[in-house]
Amino acid sequence: MHYSMKTVVTPLIATAILSAGWIGFAQVQEKPKEKPAPTKKPAEVKDPDEEAIRRSAAAFATAYKAHDAKAVAELFALKAEFTDEDGELIKGREAIQQNFAEMFKKFPDSKIEVEITSIRVLTPNIALEEGIVRGQPVPDEATNVSSYVVIHVKVDGHWLIASVSDFEADSEELTPNDHLQPLAWMVGDWLDESADSTVKSSCHWDESENYLLMDFSLQIAGSVSASGSMRIGWDPLSGQLKSWSFDADSGYAEGLWIRIDDEWIVRSHGVNAAGKVTSGISVFRFIDNDTMTWRAYDRVIGGEPAEDIPENVIKRHAPAPAG
Image (cartoon, rainbow, N blue to C red):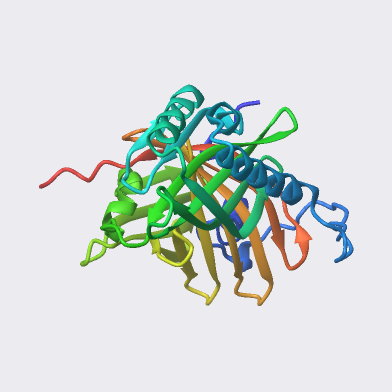
């Protein structure tokens, strides 16, 4: 079944936004469907997905130590991307294998140590790994230290590397504006209307051009029912884009953004105006300069699961003609 924005741009979408990446409004919340409460694992039980990712990291270190470019490349997805500390982007498993083979040939005695600082399983098929790499291209020379971010995807039951980004500690860093450029297409006014409600949003740069600011409102029967704002910026601590959302009735949320191909996946946590803890995942997808889609899932409000929101098409709203 096809869902358009007009089929769900009612109270359901408004309540989803805080728990799923934009902003949310408890006063128009629809009652979630009855679902069994999530079963919590005992603290001593290790997450099998996290353990699998740790084994993958260990396999990478082993293959690197052996200077086995083929074994390194087999840990990557077919269309994986690798961005080194110099900003060079390598696309595809074959190109990644060739890159490592050339590096091993140039530095036959190189070695590395990998220290994982965090692993977060964001969805059943997507996980985020962060850590520190200490590399020594030539024996007895200074060790290079860099941080890294790895996005893992599960393919046919196996975790593979979809994207790697290295950040050299002493290299010239990108500006916050540089990091935000992949989201610059969001700048502008967006509008969607149904028979009884309208969602308006407007995105623009702040004065420093280091943040994207988005204001939005929900109108029902011609009156503003809820409104809020979101600020998106670069978080140097996590090495990711991060959003801070606020609604007019004191609800708030924080979200971390990761990019998979043409989709931005936002994992958010916050509190709504009723004081209930919220969480959820939203996905923004770029279609073209005038079109994006948005969907939300894994939504939880006050410990209770809430309905998923199917993908909705949102169109850019052209400014009114002058005069």
